[in-house]
Amino acid sequence: MKRQKIIAGNWKMYKTAKEAVHFIQQLQKLIPSSKARILLAVPFTALTAAAEAAHTTSFAIGAQNVHEAVEGPYTGEISAHMLKEAGAKFTLIGHSERRRLFHESNLLIHQKIKRALSSGLTPILCVGETLVERSDGATEAVLAEQLEEGLGELSLDQLAHLVIAYEPVWAIGTGKSASPQVADEAHLLCRNFIAKKWGSAAAEQLPILYGGSVKAENAAELLNQPNVDGALVGGASLDPAAFAQIIQSVG
Ligand code: 13P
Image (tube, rainbow, N blue to C red; front, side, top):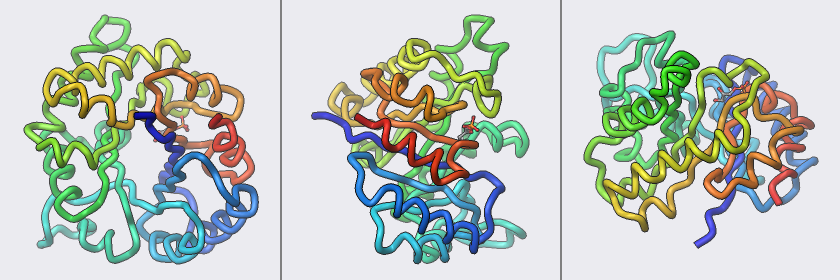
């Protein structure tokens, strides 16, 4: 089975609701149809407007984070149910910026994944090693730990609703993307980990996206790798023309 390519934008803390609507209108003009699935992870405050604007498009709107509890006294937090009602179809979980700046642990990330799944949101689990971990030869161990603790004992059915994003921390926002070979090797490590625990059929159907300085210039080569099923794009997803070029590089 050939996995459909996914091109996802992560807007981080950029764009108001108005700006999101404008972006979606622009992108629709540039990309009236595509072979790829197009996802936009927008700020919470832009979700409703973005989902409405995307209603007549094939773009799916999602969030960048979710709280692990159903509801409760968690000032400033957002629940999966709230995201769903606002029109989110998916949520990023465990982005390296959340791990590093907001101290998210693998165990917390696991709880968030279960909450997203039980609410009908597709979790996009982000994993990836730092530069020090890579130069210490610890990439495989780090990815295995993030996957082992992040995924826990999910069922095969739950795994069928999951997406993984490999985002080496050293490539995020640095302009230095992983080479296509380095990306493919890391994706294969992730896929092999899944195959060992859940079987090769589950591993074969699991989409694994690459993130870290993806731009129009390097997208095609990265997306051509056998284990790279798409891209999670930060900076270059903020401009409709730049993002459209990346989408168009899906062959
Ligand atoms: P950049 O594409 O800006 O490197 O960001 C990648 C990223 O963090 C996507 O989640």
